[in-house]
Image (cartoon, rainbow, N blue to C red):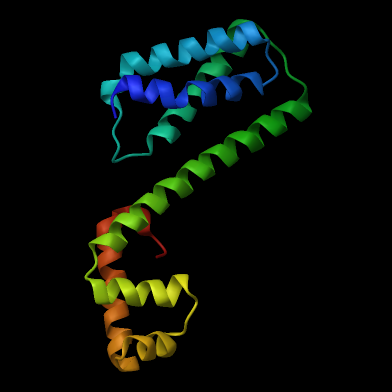
Length: 165
C-alpha cells in the first residue's frame, strides 16, 4: 500500500477518532492533518512485521491527541478519560484481532488441502475430530495426526503471535 492509498482509506476514520474525543470540528480537522503529516514523514519506517498498519496509525493518533491536549492545556472530565481509555483499548484490541485473523487466514491457505479441510471442519464447523475424519473418509487416528501437523505448521507460520494456538 502506498501513502496515497493509506491516506484515502484512513482519513475519515482518523477524523472520526478525533471528533469523538470531544474537540471542535476545526481542531479535529487540524489534528487529523497533523497525524497524517507525521505518518507521511515516518511512512517508510512502518514495519508490517511488527503490527497492522491500522494499529500503527491509531497509536500515532492516540499519541498526537495526547500531545494536542497537553499543548492546548485542554482538560477532560474524569469520566471522559475512562471512556477514552476504554475506546483506545477497544481499538487496539480490534486491530490485534484483525492482524491475527489475517495471519490465521494466510497460515490456513498455506496448508495442503486435506489438512486445511480438516482444520476447517474441526474448528470452524464445530465438528469433533471423529466426525471430521468420517466426513473426510479417514481414520480418527489419522485425523488426529493430520490435525496436529496442521496446527504445528500454522504455529510456525504465524510465529510468536501464535502463542496459545
